[in-house]
Image 1: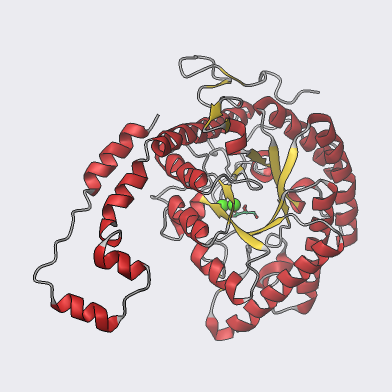
Image 2: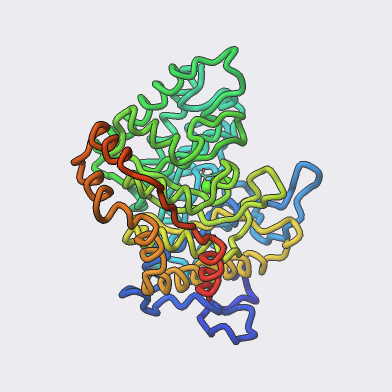
Length: 435
Ligand code: XLS
Ligand code: CA
Ligand code: CA
């Protein structure tokens, strides 16, 4: 059965097409800076938003019209896999991502949950083998079930900690079975409400202990996907431990996990932390720790994680510029951790929204490639730091100066001359690059 019956395979038709079921900018095989667009972008579709959301919000019931409800939870789970692979194929998306609870019903016990996961992942594997579609990452949802009220790897309850460990072990087994290229940890409940009843240091030690068990287990089963920590500053807990890229890196370095963990950065989470997406990616790059991206978009007028499909080409351009500077995002990718609005309730909106996101990032890539070709940023930066390329500046960066020698130099100066940053002009030039 076809779930998206009215939707054909989406192809590139160029920006003048009036076919809504076509890419206007994403041309998978087109070569940009020496490699096909699809290899730069490595698009992934998120199972949770696409297959399990219903459009409900705190004020109202679901609105989405969906046609994959079956006669039992396992029936529905299988139908969802069928519908999911149909949309992946139609969109020509190479990758997908999921949480354990998205794909399989939890049943009445952990044992039943794991058995359901086995059945469904057998089915997913068949589909992967048939289509060539790959797993970018999977993860364990350790935040929805009430048992995780006080956290998972940072809980005060050792039994809950053990269940979290079992879930992640299963997640790694599934990753091996499906040849997952990355494995994500987003600490939904890893944080706290109030220091009056919390030992933060104890909880962070336990979190690091958990990650060490993960590294050991992955080695023991001879499957080592790239491990990723996904920062987010708040929601659901008030103080999330992995606040932003810099905080996550401090944790990773304190516990000497830097050889095994990189970062999965989400645009909406960057905004919630008071940063731009490109800031977060740049910080990760500075630590040589850029792993993968969750491409979505927040709303500055709203203070929560709206997970909108990305349509802002300015942000996409600056994000893709960072990716190009990083020499690419592989083995990570660009995952649409995004959901259609409650008012976009028709089935076809799922397809149209992904086309919008893919076209936006394709435009970002084209614009960023043009900026790189023209050495747009390089020139600005070279000019800005010119005082360090000769004379005393050069001496400083070659570590040939000290406080005494610099004092002698400073006392010999009459006036200093600063250069304007010309930021308005630069922003205007940057606008010309947006395609
Ligand atoms: C929630 C997160 C989540 C992670 C995976 O805000 O974005 O969806 O990406 O657990
Ligand atoms: Ca995310
Ligand atoms: Ca999010």
